[in-house]
Image (cartoon, rainbow, N blue to C red; front, side):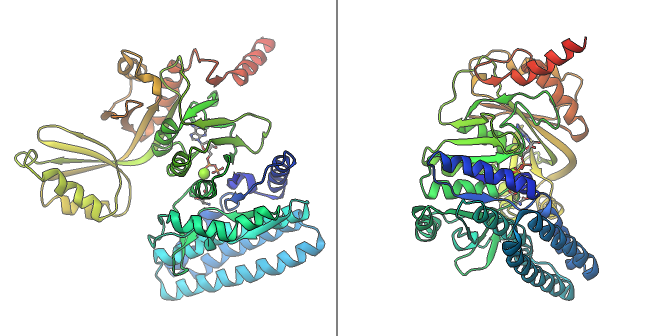
Length: 471
Ligand code: ADP
Ligand code: ASP
Ligand code: MG
């Protein structure tokens, strides 16, 4: 059971989390709990590390002081006197060592990726200790496990890759005995360590990934991702408040959505679950009664071509024009090698006789990448682009879908189009400023008549009922 930042954002949220876990245990189920840092804490730790890296010691320490107070206040609301005294002392010790670290970074005036990971790891280290203590106090036999003892990774700081065989062995050695003793292990997501014990992180949103690694490693009966929405929705409800819950979606569809921007799941989460055929559920910790979304191996047939629309911002299009060389043997390789060297992932590619256009996440190394590419071609870079990805296995059975998609957004300038070989997604690039409007237009068009077997229409019906009764 993984609880995201909003599910542990304050003492009330942690209480709800404890009640949800208690419900599972009452049914005779064993639970391993993975928690994120309290909401926004990771952002603030990144800001503190960056301030220290600029030499702004006072700024870094001020951010850390705010975090110290928030954790202490939350613990005081959450824990009884005796447990609070213990936690209070532990939090001071941890924050003292965070402050030492920030002073060190500020003194050197340089923030390395390795030290950055150590700073941000405090978020999950602290939240997991607090949740474990809360569980212990509420009869759930909560016991804290430092995730860095089990989640073994390579040394690619900032986005470390897990070493699954080593993780499985560690989980069997350290976590399984706790389960057998009817305890509830609580560990932080997102963080890990190298074989040499150096702290790493799995990349933003990585707590979902930790949950899948733990669930996969111990062959769990299910992996539950508890968050702040009712499940995977037909699009981000922040863009489209009338988005509907998708009751059931396939691994393949969920993976495409996650990869192309639906923040509700980390893109790598699905893999460990697929490998072991473990069902994944996305559930709402603020509305635990809701059925959520079940992610399964096979998608049930759906009358609508699409299940969901994802959008990803802050992308850059790179146009590479090489009039003579493009079709020559090995040319594509030389282009992709440049991206490889900078560990820069490419989202979408389209080619013509003389040009290649590709899209990448905006990052600070792009100028260097373009400089290298300029040695073999004419290069143009355009930022502030966004990708919209429409996902659904049932596109296959529908004719004229592309016409409908582009008809629905005929007022928007579309830059690049791709229909994946998997035939379950249709993606295209537009200007960042057009995203919200385009998603809403597409949502209106494709979910006007939703298949009630697949989409939960009750919320929409309730809303309509309210409007009608007002009228
Ligand atoms: P957590 O902290 O629990 O990991 P996240 O903020 O990472 O939560 O992910 C949940 C958020 O993902 C939701 O609040 C929602 O705004 C966003 N989101 C984007 N696309 C979707 C989608 N298709 N379905 C549901 N939520 C989505
Ligand atoms: N706390 C980390 C983040 O904000 C990991 C996570 O929440 O999944 O990215
Ligand atoms: Mg998340």
